[in-house]
Length: 275
Image (cartoon, rainbow, N blue to C red; front, side, top):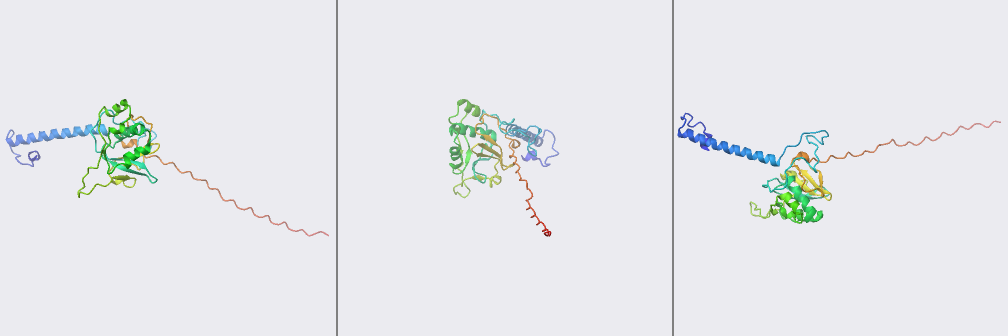
């Protein structure tokens, strides 16, 4: 590394001399490492962060191409086990003020989480969203490290194979965490008030009608994917496909001018009796 940096030393050394040869070898090594690093980044970006499609008429918001989140055109194809990414997310149950959930460390992107959650609801939990929320949100002491194929229990083999490529991996919690002072780790709760400060990228709220998908750095809410959606659907990982719902304008009542009381009829003047 010192030779690679060079810093002007042995600048006048002849070609073929040991200093020049050492410098060239170190430079070639660093070039190969840099090329390998760039190739790895290109592969990861192409796999996990595809660009959004070209904007088309009917935009849903500033900079957001109108893509239906139920069947987006880009995403990671299910069917094989990927190296887990440290894409942080949370799974939550709805509350009167927003949501209350639990932290998940790995594979938080929609292309990884939605197929697991949809399949778990349809088969393992047999359509019981409350039982699912109790298992995934309430029943965790600290947080989730990763959600695994145990959530696919009861699903047809063709669905499991389509989602996993035949591989199996277990769900793992973060109960093994060691704090700096040795104290027990605390529960990693995520709410609508704390999500933006907890460095999570995605959120999944288990609602009665489906899964609300929230791109946390870009929106406070998101579209809902119905529980009957085919888990083999290709889901996009680009935030532009998951915009916050457009608020419905409030209907304003038309005010009418208050009715004024009719003026009392003036009494007719008495006429004198003619004699």
